[in-house]
Length: 142
Image 1 (cartoon, rainbow, N blue to C red):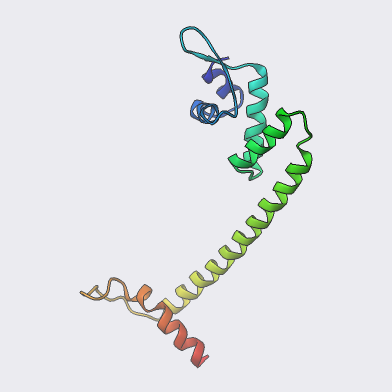
Image 2 (image 1 turned 90 degrees about the horizontal axis):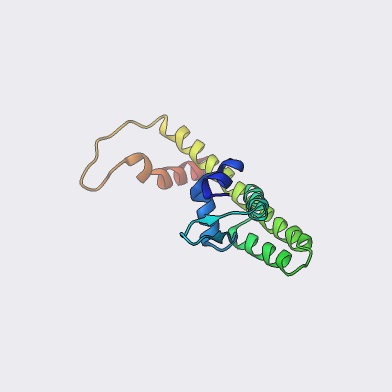
């Protein structure tokens, strides 16, 4: 298969195939004219890579997993360990996003009662520049 064939068969882009080829995660055969040809093994490997990426595994994770498999070892214990790490990271990011959403909602609520002002030489937008001071005053007065 050519790069376009394998990309089409996996509903991805040729650039994606080339990217993982450059990283050495897939190793197609090269012909005399320099074209790369992908085997069904390459197709299976790329399918695995794409599935792993959809689960949140990093390229580094995938490299580790493939190394285990290439050495004839079961990658399953490593996969379980890595997915737990990715889940913890995702949970942390999720909590940070919830906190950000609360700050944004608080800012909108605070700004509802504030007038628009033109910028000055010392101020771009008073809404953003006063968010901490006025928010702190409300917290002290609340």
